Length: 123
Image (cartoon, rainbow, N blue to C red; front, side, top):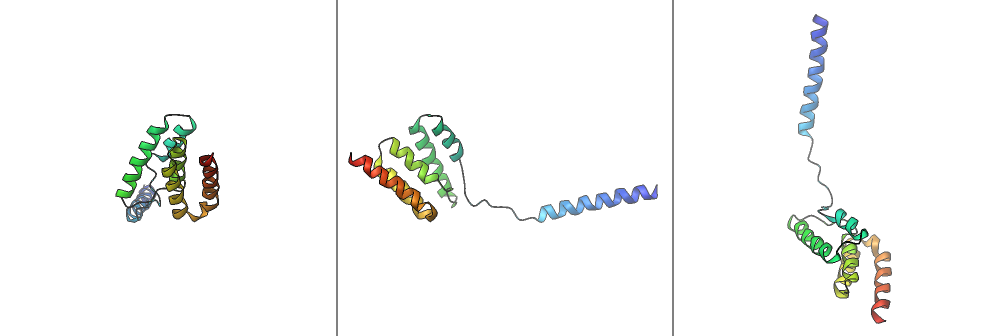
């Protein structure tokens, strides 16, 4: 019986130590705040109302800014595409420029989209 209590005591000590270490672990902060971005992308590909998507993304962007967090890569590009599909070219260009400024690695793609938009606007 002494060995059984010793084994149970050992297991209890490990469990208590694990709980103690878990309680001391730092809280992980995510780099980006996603809000409803992913569901909005899904709705976009399902052809759902674009005006409602723009409103939802703009509202989420205000929430993100209010918490001093950052929108994820592609957020402004997606918002720009939505604005472009609604014929709001000024807002589209602004969102593409914002995406480029925040994520320089997207510059080539944003320039491609901007150049194609300019060709479409002139026609």
